[in-house]
Length: 320
Image (cartoon, rainbow, N blue to C red):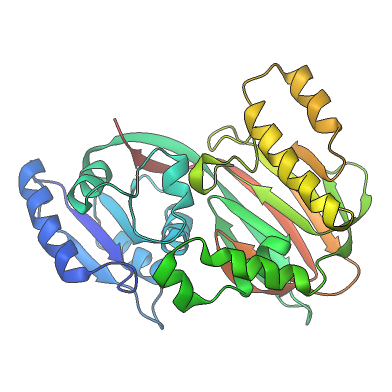
C-alpha cells in the first residue's frame, strides 16, 4: 500500500516557506507520509486556485497554512469532497482554528502534526451570495462569520502594516475609524422564509461559529457543526448603546451554559443586541451600499445578501 501524500497550500505573506518546508520533512518522516506537494499562493493565484490544483493531483489531505482568508478559500474548494482539510494557523485572528481547538501558539511542527494526524471532524460551511451596487452578484464561502456594517468597516479601515506588526489590536483603530464614519444603515431581512423585518442597525453579522480572540464569544449559541446559522443584529442608540452592546456580549458569553429560558430572558433585557437562529438569511440594504466581510476579508460594498449554511460540508483535522 502506498504511503499517503498531502498538498500544503501556503500563504508566503503569513508563513516562512523555507522553515515550513523543513518542518514538513520532519513530520512526514515521523508519520510515514510521502513528500508533500507544496503550493504557494500569489496575487494572481489565490488559495482557491491552489486548492483546485491540489485536488487534481489526487492527494489524501489538503493543508491550509496561513490566515483565516487562506483557510476559507481552501475550505470552499473542499466543500462536499472526501479529502480532509488540515489547518496550520498563521494569521492575525486564526478564528476557525481557535473555534476548533487548534492553538495558534503551538510550534510549527506541533501544528503540522495536528493537520496530518488529528482526528476528523465534519463541520458546516456558510455561503453568501451578495449583490453589489452595480447589480453584479458574487458568491463567497465562509467558515466563521460574514458581516455588514461596523465589523466590515473595521476590517476595511484597519492598517495592514500595523496589523502585521502588532496583531489583532490593530483592529481597534479600524473600529474607531468605522464608527467615526457613521455606522448605522437601514435594511430589511428575513430568516428561513418567514416575515420580513425592517431595522436600523450598526451591524448585521451571520456566524457559523462564535468565538473571537481571547475566548470572547460573539455568538454564544453558535456551534460549527449544528447545521444552524446564528445572526446578531447590533442596534445601539448613542454612546451608551455601545456600552450596552459590550455588556450584552459579555453577559451572553457568561450565560452560555445557563438553561435556554434563562439565557433568553437575560438577552431580552439588552435591546441593542438581537440574536436569531436559522439556516437561511436574506438581507436587503435600503439606505446606501455597505462594506461586507467574510472571515476577516473585506470583499467590497453590497446592497443585498443571501446567506445559507451547508451542514457537514467539510472534514477538518482537529486535535485528538
